[in-house]
Image (cartoon, rainbow, N blue to C red; front, side, top):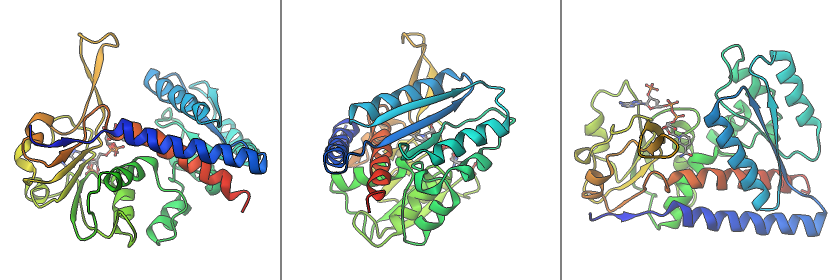
Length: 294
Ligand SMILES: NC(=O)c1ccc[n+]([C@@H]2O[C@H](COP(=O)([O-])OP(=O)(O)OC[C@H]3O[C@@H](n4cnc5c(N)ncnc54)[C@H](OP(=O)(O)O)[C@@H]3O)[C@@H](O)[C@H]2O)c1
């Protein structure tokens, strides 16, 4: 292997420490404890694991982390009332509704019901608009985490060609928005690919920085990577693995061993982008709480 392996855990720990310091300062100077509430509807086991880890991570940095658990058959009106109650609660600075929601609930409607100043996921149309008009309030945590990793690793993004595979509202599109900004860790030339892209390999082979977020394990092979490129694998897919206690393992999009022979640096899965996501989410909660004191 020739590529340097980017250690997301270490970078995320640094971000979490920054957040913990900010939380301590807010408490001592203003008596405010930042608070995040996660709303979860239904009993999808994977979602419950994610929600518990967010709650724990919030508490570890000194925040109030709480979870509102609602049954799978929760009516639309009750979910919207719950969100409205959190919007009005001054102790709650960040609201997150765990996706996916049961089929009878409209995710877009619920996201729009969140007060945009508490939308720490950065998915409310107001926050999306602010990001793309260069007035960022909250950027979604995963793309922010990717950008922070690149900065921490000293990857020069300005002037570089970044190719993003995946155009979701959660990852691909906001990452493009962040990297198109003029500031530090940005100013890139960005190409966004998707299933309608005519020749994916031709695009990825031109990438100085290749970010994959397809959710399809093995979709990025070594021959799709330009020699010396930096490869960021956002993909996190559960694949059955009888040798694991849980019965599954997490797989990225990239065939790691192949890409590592060609790239200059690469993120592993797990231990790459994943830990950054929760750290950057906590950063958004801190920012929201700080904004209440001007
Ligand atoms: N590490 C983390 O913290 C974190 C956070 C968020 C997401 N993730 C992971 O990242 C992955 C993507 O998540 P997401 O929410 O963005 O998924 P998504 O909404 O399913 O979007 C996947 C995107 O990839 C594109 N795509 C799929 N197969 C492709 C192919 N063969 N060639 C080109 N484009 C292809 C799709 O194109 P179309 O639009 O044309 O369908 C779509 O834009 C998942 O594995 C998810 O678990 C990880």
